Amino acid sequence: MRGPEIAQQASGPKPNCIRHMPMRIPVLLLFVLTYLGSFAQHLTFEEWKEQSVVDMRLMPHYGNRPKNQKMLASDSTFVALTLASIPDPHTAADHLVDLGFGLLREGNMTHAMYRFNQAYLLEPKNTNIYRGYGAFFMAMDRTDEAGRVYADGLAIDSTESRLMIDLSTAFLAAEYNARDREPEKADQLLAGSIKLLRRALQYEPKSTEANFKLSVAYLRKDECLEARKYRDICEELGGAELTLEFEGALQRKCPK
Image 1 (tube, rainbow, N blue to C red):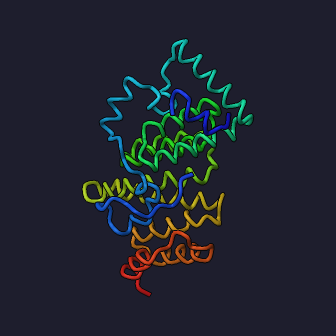
Image 2: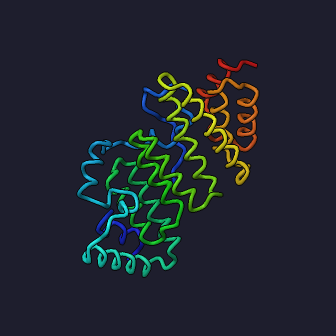
Image 3: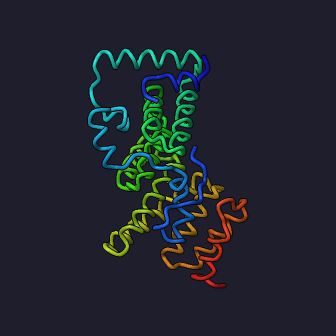
């Protein structure tokens, strides 16, 4: 039995750059919150809170709740069947995370979380799982919850640049939401996002995503020289994230 079939039959069930976002987000933020817009949300935060009370599989790492003997036996069987098909736990966990992201993009949020948690059974310290957990909450526009699980992932590996970029994205989303009501908090979030992105570039200097998001963050901060600097670096590296809409926003706010 192949890995995908195992995952689909189990008891529970790499994000790409996506450019379509909810209309309430302003143009500048359209270019930074890359993976939210592709997720057709089929579960609200309130529904998730209600359902996760009775289904621990909807909580990241099962909510750290104790399991009964039947659950533990089911977990052991799942792990054994999966490793019989994909012997390397890391590869198997990554496969399940990929399945989870695919389900999340389809709007099947419940089974996406099941897959992320199945990956957790195989390799609890795999930081890609925490990217999945965070994306789950970002799809519901819950930046605080997303930020916490991204931080949990960074506690496992403080050098994981992709988690830094993800956490910076959560900060940027929260900064936008807080700007009018809590400007000081918004400033702190923006500064935190920039700090994370600059740190990510220390580990992955050729990341077009990190350079692009730094450009957006500096544009939010009205620092045009830095915004154009990182925009140009992104372009030199291939500029996959750059769009005509972003170029227009940059030109309007920071004309040459």
